Length: 203
Image (cartoon, rainbow, N blue to C red; front, side):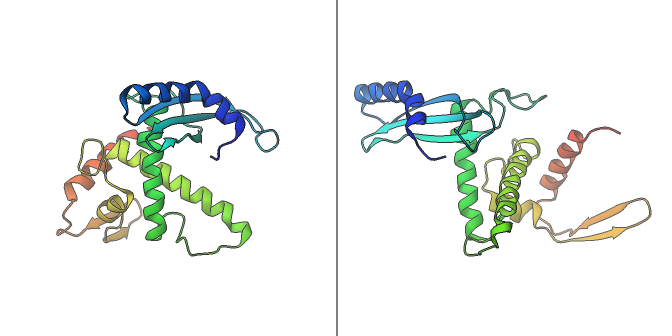
């Protein structure tokens, strides 16, 4: 989200600490903070904002991200620190930014950047795009953890795992999906499918 005087005031102590550490070391320094913030007119309630106070030889570089991801992670997750300020910004938000750039280049979740949807369609495209990003993040964390695709970009995940030719046959009781025997990532596909099925609610 864009900077304003209120956000900069909230990030002030972290920015001062980053400047102090930069002066001592000469290296680029990042200090993270989080706080509740609410606009005067457009937001109906306060929201969680993560601020990055970065100082380098180029000067101050404060940045802000608004999120509804829970600071203690999702219920039942083993890694309860995934969404603490530093990790949320560096592992989730920065990765999402890379995904968005890649998707704009290859017609990803939210469509090509040179398309011009009607005004009424724009919010739907934005929501669909961010929903796609969230689903991809969950797929990588829950289904691909510990594999070669755990830290791959979204284009690689789509190409190797999602955009796969298959023959689908539907019977009265079952849906059969048959993959080509030459598909090179069969074991990865099976592992990811098994992990995701284990997350499905019983009954």
